[in-house]
Length: 230
Image 1 (cartoon, rainbow, N blue to C red):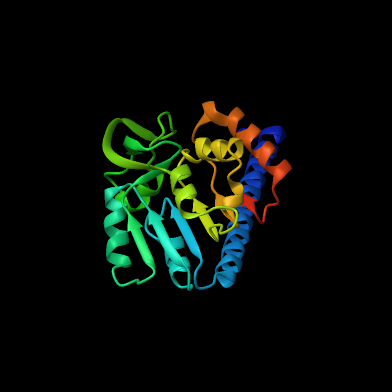
Image 2 (cartoon, rainbow, N blue to C red):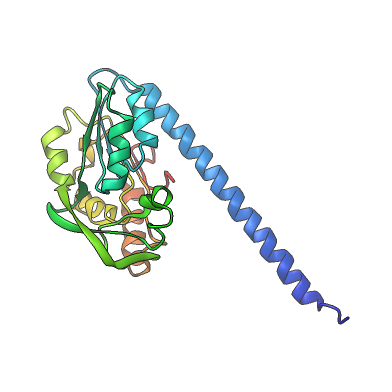
């Protein structure tokens, strides 16, 4: 039986170590996000308005609904929205809207993950209105309503009465929204905004994401605009 060269053995060990480190970093990131969210919820008061953009199955919606704030949750995927509707049917402070949010309004094509049919509950979180995503079935899509987040922001808030909190997990559509908010100086309309960005999912957009992150980190504290929430 031939021996495995030391350099090959070392390479395998390094790969295992790197995998463990990545897992630990993900766990730490998740714990930080959960702590951040708990802090936000503890500070919400009657009269506050919060938005959950990309509510999916309602994990964050439920946390926000347990506070005195008024919660508006947006979810475009009909499968996920049906679960939201059942889950929050008796929640007096939750308004559900079956629509996507983006920089511009209209009707858009919602594309789902390649494994949606096999695991709709797990895969629905990946549904996106942005073409070119990794592991997304672009050949089949469904038409959904899309609302302008910028219009929503102007309608519901301004610097004298900002939204208390916005959570944004909208599978790539956050890029144009956040770019437009920077350009139009709209971050003063929100006390705290957290977003999951999707550079890994959209390789071609990575330079724009890097530029966005740089611009936001120069102007805003993470307690105001947090792009590393998850």
